[in-house]
Image (cartoon, rainbow, N blue to C red; front, top):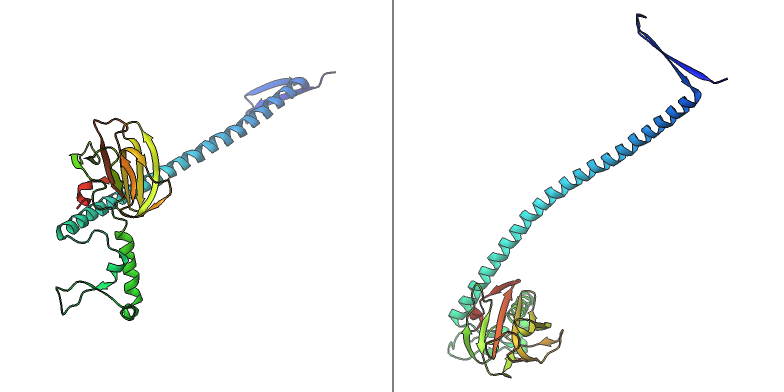
Length: 265
C-alpha cells in the first residue's frame, strides 16, 4: 500500500478549502528539490556577498589611489621646485666664478683677514683641532655634495647642437678617439648599445645627478667602477645614427634632463 500525504489548505472562516494528495515518492523528490534550492540560495549568498565585499574594497582602493595621486602631484611639484633651485644655484655659481669642485683641502682653508690679497693659507693641525666638530660635519657634507656636481666640458670640441625641447643634451664635435673626461666623481652605472646613440655610457654622481655619453667609440671603464673628476672614461666616436664624429652629452638632475650648458663653465 502506497503511503500518501494529504495537505489541506483552508481559510479561518472555512469558506476556502483545498486538499492535495502527495505520494511518498513525490515527497522525496520535493524534499530533494528543496535541499537543492537551499544550497543554491546559500551559494548565491556567498557569491554575491563576496562580490559586495570586493566592490567595497575597490571603492576603498579608488579613494586610496586618489590620495596617492594627490600626494604624487605634491612630490612632483617639490621636485620641480628643487630642480629650479638647483638651476638657479648653478647659474649663480657660474656668475660669481665660484670654484667648480672644491677639494677637502680647500674646504678646510682660511683666508688671512689682515692680508686680503694673500693666497689662502692651509690651516695647521693645531688650528684644525680648534675647528668645531659641527663645522667639520657640515664642511664634509658640502664637500660630498659639490664633488658630485658635474662641471666643465667632458671633451674638447665645439657645440654643434644645443639643448632644447627635442634635443635633451649637447652635441660636441670632436675627432674620433678624443678622450672623454668624467665631469665629477661618480660610478659607471650602465654601458649599452643604443639604436640611435650607439655605444652609450651612463655615470651616476651621488643621489642627484647622472650624466650620459653617446656615439662613443670605446668605453674605458667597467660597469660599477668608481671614477674621479677628470678621469678618462671613454673615447669619442661615430656609433649609432650620426652625421659625423661627435659626443652626445646629457645631464640629469633628480631624474629630469637639465641644460648641460649651465654646468660647463
